[in-house]
Image 1 (tube, rainbow over the protein chains, first blue to last red):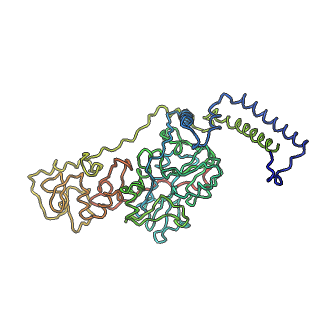
Image 2 (cartoon, rainbow over the protein chains, first blue to last red):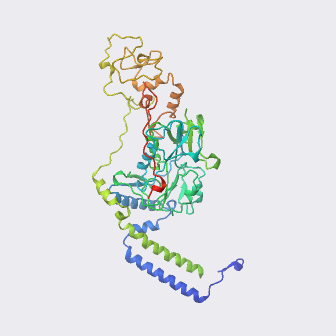
Image 3 (cartoon, each protein chain N blue to C red):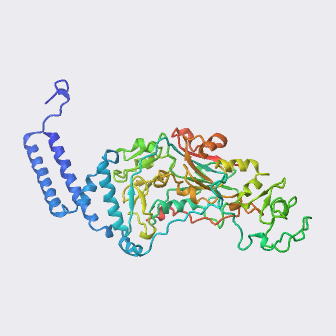
Length: 312
Length: 199
């Protein structure tokens, strides 16, 4: 059916001869692929299910259950121990917020490695979700002269201060806007998540993030089986595959169950704070209302829910 | 007709991709390198669950704090200091506790400003009220008022547990030695690999 109004724009039909030839070629290819499919891996239902899996948000309750069960089976076999994969929904009336005391952080990187262990980041090739920047106290927050590779005997080094940077969980996240397949989005509780099975690895989000918070799995991630954290979340710390982007999820597997994120728990100086922005009695609200708060790259209007502050 | 051709092409390429995608999954060990080997090793080692520290204070206490960080064998103080002992109340150097270096307003303060001479297993506030070691934050807060306020609100100091429920507070003394409270420098964990070294 051709709409008459649109007729002048209609693409002319290709000549009959060329068209039949191309169609025959494509049909042939299709038949070949079909044959390969039936003989090669028709028995491997897992792979087929994985390939045909829908977007996380489009999964019905039963489909989601099947997906989680499939993943649990796969990871458990792969790592030789029971690995749980859950998809805990966001809590009602909760908007997460994070605060970090710049006057207390000593740059010891306990958070970096605590996060690696909790969130099953690849050990080799190395992936870190948190970058700790060292800067001169005199210069203030001056990112172009920041050093993430400092290697002192002891910290804090004289005249330096430290600024750990990870995903800022923006209310207005540029990474989400640029994703061409909507594999990353902001959840109701404010956590920006990634569906690793939907990610096509285009890395637009990495380019869009002004905080350098996203990491790409250039190689196949490697985690020693005995170090794998078996309590995992679909949108969080489950093992990732090569070719997908990952980043901090505010320990979704912990925080949606009411626990503090791992980095909060391992910080030896108590510089890291976490809580519900909608709860007026939370420590996060106390900090925002009573302390000098600094928002990284505030001028970009990304509206981070990560607040640096000066406690002293 | 053209649309049909495109659709066919998409279907064909999808089917092709599928056959390629199937292959590595059939052998998970190969895909994850040392995975299979490591998995076998891990099967024998049970995971050690993190044991939460038991709060030293009863549930009725205002702040659930971690147990006071006594040095080994030092508490109860009354093991050595008996109630009838003669006490020299003039500030003087103490020979026995040589491991304690007072660097906390030491010109104006000494042991018995906080420790109680009569009740050795207690501390006392400036007005003489006795308190347990588990409530030592009240003692610290006499001078460090704003810090105590911030600590109660959860801003100062580390809290663990649940952001929405039961929290474990740490005593001031858990992080700051009451005798020399300044933080000691720490050895940092290793720096990240430079990008060019990641293979």
